[in-house]
Length: 153
Image (tube, rainbow, N blue to C red):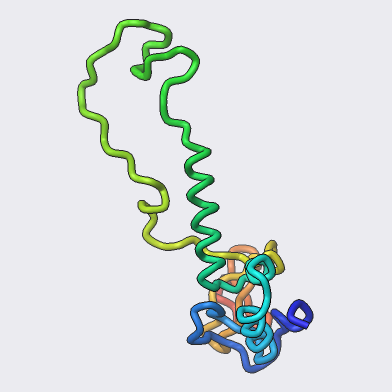
């Protein structure tokens, strides 16, 4: 039932005060996603875009593991890291190396999470007229609920 009624769109829709479900497309959508956040496993919650504490912790762990395994700092191919290729004599550094900041700490905002079910729809901001999610149409955004356009032509 959760997969059938999640992201069903009809009025009323809009922003919620629940941090796990920030935007609901309809009352059944909100109710089904709330039920999923309480009773379904973490994999299903993640695929539905429900941001419970467990899902956020899992994403943080995956991001940390990805940043550790994708670290490319350091010399390769026998180089000494000073741009001198295979030279064996160390060169004095002109400036001390700056302390590296992990990418997760350097970001100011968390990246938006796109549920697997919603991937590829390229939703834009919330509509100023009705609160529905706008979709990209060329260089503009158009609300699929009320037809409001951002005014590109």
